[in-house]
Amino acid sequence: MQLVFAYIDPGAGSLVIQAIIAGLVSIPFFFRNAIRSTIGRFRHKPTDGASAATGSSASEEKGAASTDSE
Image 1 (cartoon, rainbow, N blue to C red):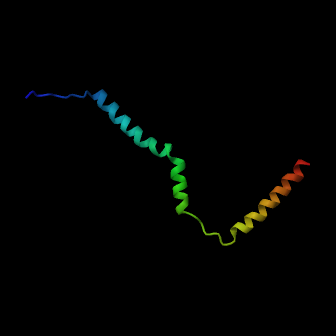
Image 2: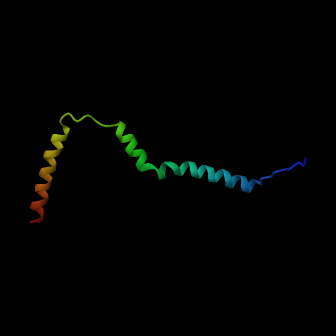
Image 3: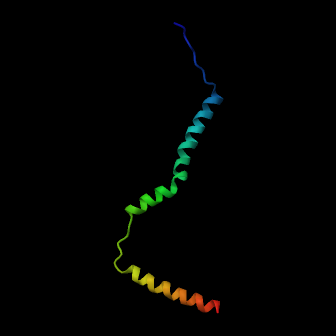
């Protein structure tokens, strides 16, 4: 049986550690849309009449935009 001595010099070791850290940090940026949609499903606000108020203001904004363009 032969003894095998594996050696990683400090430069290669730090490169491996840097690659691992960069990979872990980049995962949330890569999947951010999926993460946002998943979190958004759990954070739905109850609609108790606030949507009616926003609907009326949206129609007023459309009317104001059409008069500005004339």
